[in-house]
Amino acid sequence: MRSLTRDTLDHGLFVKRAALRARGWSDGHLRGEVNRGTVVWVRKGWYSVPSAPPSAVEAFRIGGRLAGLSCLKSYGIWTPTTGRLHSASPAPRAGCGARRTCAHGWMCSTVCGVA
Figure 1 (cartoon, helix red, strand yellow):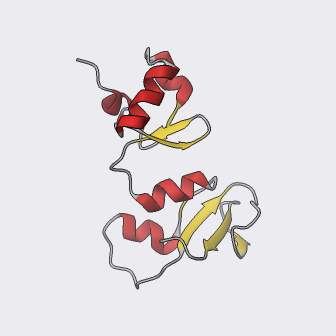
Figure 2: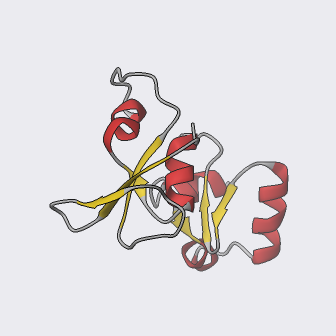
């Protein structure tokens, strides 16, 4: 039997709506599965699984990916306790805290108040 969770994870932690549609999942079915908690709507056109690390989901929601301490923590590496989300995004976004340009060209930021 096909599984929306398996189809989502086959694409990585985050999957585009178009990829799920290509596998035969209708928009109505996707909405129903979000309501049931089978998948999580992350941002326009993107889904994930409920077991996704909350910090990774938050970083993705603001248009980036985990960086620094948040990234290390997601791999189970000990980090100092912080209430900030460390993320990197390909373009500056309003309201995302102090930034600096990294060697890879992304904008790094520390977002205050996001666990």
